[in-house]
Length: 143
Figure 1 (cartoon, one colour):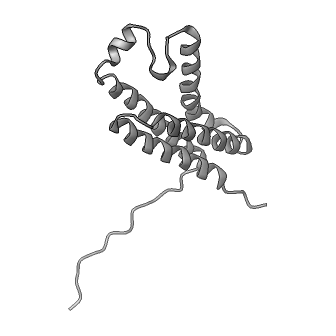
Figure 2: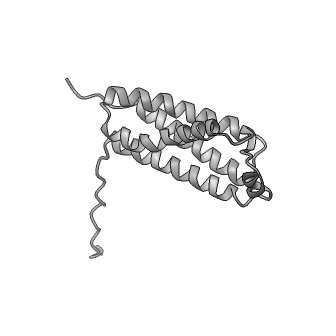
Figure 3: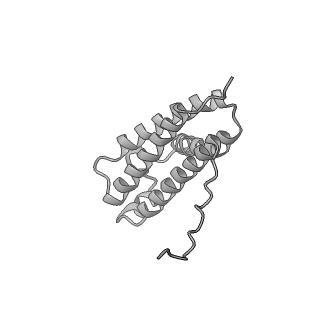
């Protein structure tokens, strides 16, 4: 006896362009950065150090230190947009180079960190390396 139950057709799965995937990865990476920094404020003594003008391993807070860290955080934020508007050949290399750079930054900042930061760091490294892989495997148009 055959079942009269109808099988639903498969769900539609639209092809997502590489540019949108890269932009989404940079967005995810930035959100992990923001949450890591936010949760870091709950560590004992963190706010006291901030009030006293200390910025972790960077030492004394100066305008130059703040400009440097602002540049470091502005780049991934800008990549959310730039990944969408850059020409593919340029975007491929910019994403690959910056993905490696930001993975390296996380590797350097994770030792001795609290477990929440290490967890987010591993996620950030995986996101950064996914950016690199996706950029380097960017499909070519048929001639």
